[in-house]
Image 1 (cartoon, rainbow, N blue to C red):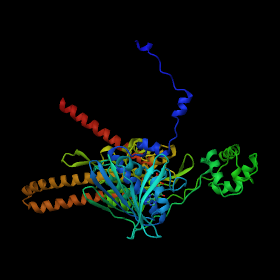
Image 2 (cartoon, protein in one colour):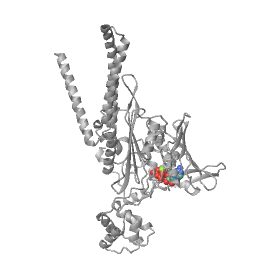
Image 3 (tube, rainbow, N blue to C red):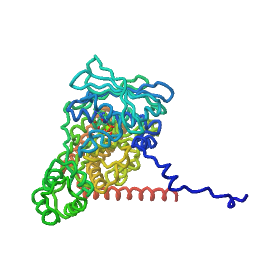
Image 4 (spheres, rainbow, N blue to C red):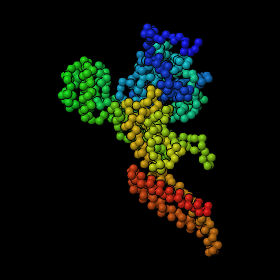
Length: 576
Ligand SMILES: Nc1ncnc2c1ncn2[C@@H]1O[C@H](COP(=O)(O)OP(=O)(O)OP(=O)(O)O)[C@@H](O)[C@H]1O
Ligand SMILES: [Mg+2]
């Protein structure tokens, strides 16, 4: 039978669709889409697991105002099978919440708050519980102790159908313990010591969290301790309210249902940032309903009217005082201790606001030389391994190791013309670029939280911050180049001084050593004079403006072109 003569199977009827129609929970959805949580890929999954537990521990310690002391251990228990243990000294979890914290997706203490925290979605630790039970069939063990009562141990699993936690084997422990320790097994993951390994993740975590002590024991039993370089507990970030400029009608409706305010006027004043008496007066004048009305009775049309007024009124810019940068001094100390660079420049920019009315702030650092940059397999002329550029991306002090290309930070680094700042070949420079974006709501590109979206205001501020430290580095690179030239000159002078001394000794009959010593004196005096002149120039101002950088850059380009032309001319003459 010809293909087009075959009977066409009957199509689905509405009744068939009705029979097929099923509901599924958020847990079932993520179970099918673990890649969305960054929990796929053998190496990536293991680092993401460490990242989820680690950020929760740091968040918990920060909220409880405790200096974090966190231990991470990874044990190999079979082929591509590992056990991950993360233990913190945080506030712990109560018996009632421990199940929900580790066994219910989209549940937690952070999603509904506009606050600078590492977690924001409520799927990190529960995602790990899910992966563990999906790959090993085993529960996740959580031991937790609070300031009240003895610590407990429980085993948590998720019932995916209902996205509900199942808590078993509750044991009350005799040993004293305050904090949370989680132990989970995973199959189909792999520990490799690479640039995206848990060790690198923890090294970067230590850099951005100088107040934390982090201990890591890898599968080979090797212990690495990142000790804290600051004993000061960072001030707790404070929660901010949504700015009227960034809210939607739906946001207003949602907030109106849960407010404690009795009147719409006080609801607007209390639940939104920067809404004062003047704004209320304006809104009262232009809306069709009474602002003394109960906000719980607010209708969609009325909320639309409010949002329309929000768009017209000139509000003060959103509050930014809830943000807590790491701080220049701490970033300096931490990078010095972990990266040990020759040159280091750190800058903390002023807070800004991106679309939606979310405040954010950029911290940036450039570290050059020493252990800055990443080791590559390329070798230099002397056979030494060459260090290449390393971009350390962070959001709310959490390292971002994956999805590099899609991240606003990478794009901003690539968009800067580094040649202007003396870096001719940025890819092959021993350079670490550190960028931390802090915000009450980090605009991640996906639930895996590995890359920042390139919001216009964020891109602009990233570029400006990189250029700011770039300008400072420009002076250092210039200084380094002059130093190298000086060393070359000195070597050359000394070489000739010896030869000249031999000649002069023969001509004058005087001792060669005496002449040589005098010539060395002359060379030293000459070099010192040059140094004094340079010092004077350095004092002119510690930082060049963008225009001065441009001028210097153009001068350099012209000089290089002249030299090139000269060389070319020389070669043509030789060829002739
Ligand atoms: N080590 C811990 N100590 C105290 N509380 C914790 C700890 N780990 C998790 N929690 C609690 O469990 C909640 C759920 O954690 P989970 O990682 O799933 O989500 P999140 O941290 O809120 O957001 P994200 O999905 O972005 O990580 C947290 O909000 C926190 O309240
Ligand atoms: Mg989390």
